[in-house]
Image 1 (cartoon, rainbow, N blue to C red):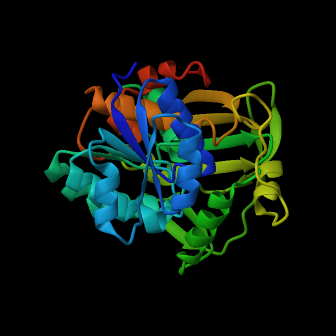
Image 2 (image 1 turned 180 degrees about the horizontal axis):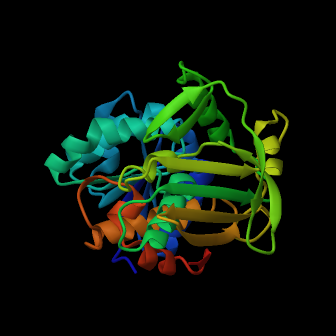
Image 3 (image 1 turned 60 degrees about the vertical axis):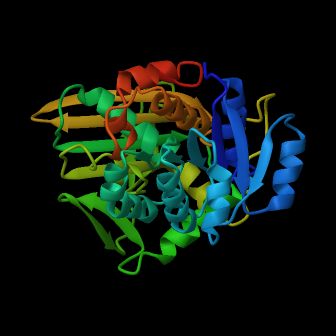
Length: 342
């Protein structure tokens, strides 16, 4: 448990941000609520006795410095991350504290690795992007499956979501990400690099472990794993797949936002993430299952912060979950939220 350390949460009043704040409180941290909307912050803070609200804007570095003052770390839960990641990371570097975000935007995560690798390393500060369901969880599963290996021939990550009701933040982040793809609407990681194009995404069959079994998936439904995994694994091919039902829901303009279905505010959505790593004719598999992709991002991000502030990390600078932490141990620590099989 934490010893009452403060952790700033930028975008605290958002859908995922509220799960992050609840997880911090449960684990003994003191959240500092921050974000652009002062009124929403005040309303949220009123429901949490003793919790401070510090409005801040990404266009005002001084306000971000005030928001992070006295904090042991910051979690950025405010998308689109194309707009928020850079200024909040810069504020974290000025404060000398670890930065964690829950970005699923491929381009924003690429920017973080390219722009802050050297500044974060020089500052001796940890920056962990995509520490969430998309990007972080897959990377941990790949790292756990690899064991001591640092290379593979292929990595495949299949998402068996029962459905996908996107938040307003997910829709906004997705729109920004698509707008940035000037070289094509589709992206995939192949031949050791990201490639953009307009090829149609194929519908394929994927054999998930039971109880899902064989399901239709959209091939090259590319998620942040194509950034996190190759950042520390020598692999020429990283492919991701999405259950057809979930892909259709997230693409539909009239799909409602997720609704609470239990006392913790989680939706009824379930997920199964199936990772297959192939190398030299050998195949290794890692599987994680649980409930609510947004809710589960909170323990992922908070566990990362806990390890960073207690010295249970492997490096400084920009690093993905699998490079920054002991992946099997990290996954075991989430047993209350995830069922994992290696």
